[in-house]
Length: 258
Image (tube, rainbow, N blue to C red):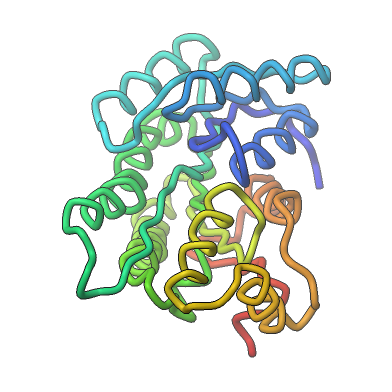
């Protein structure tokens, strides 16, 4: 792939999959703005990238605040003259039986995962349209396709992101902007470990047994790693992916074809 240096914004980039994507972008020569709620995490990630010879800065952002998203994008464009790539990896989950779910927690998942995706997409579109080039990539989930017991609202929020991407891809197709989803399978991150631990408790099995059951569902016999997801994102962000838009790219070891 041709590695043309770009300016990329990665939300949720302070840890987990988002951090892996930010590190991959920096290794590919892109300038990376890492945004998340935790100032400590984004600054630590940016510093680690800079120490490795990359170009990065950390910024705090709550993706549920549309004004904050617009402000951050304006500041990026002022500083760098453009914003070429958005990867929205910000996300949260909530594990609970349907009859016991807290409506406030449910709303928080929808606001972060779905409305947040819409807000940051809207924020980056103007400079991308002006440049006639852009890449918008959202991190979805295979749970939107296969379901997830006790995580219905998370699955629904990610399903909404997948639908959002298809519609935005059609709307922006003539603007030089592609819009896609990377849908990871089972990836060991802080969020995954927390949510799967909660699901194990609700199933009444040990966490080790629950993890073994999950692994048995994956044809390749191994969990996905963050750098696997980052590689898929790197492709979708490249010039070579100019004809790929409105797609959901599953990175799941074959889980969704079982």
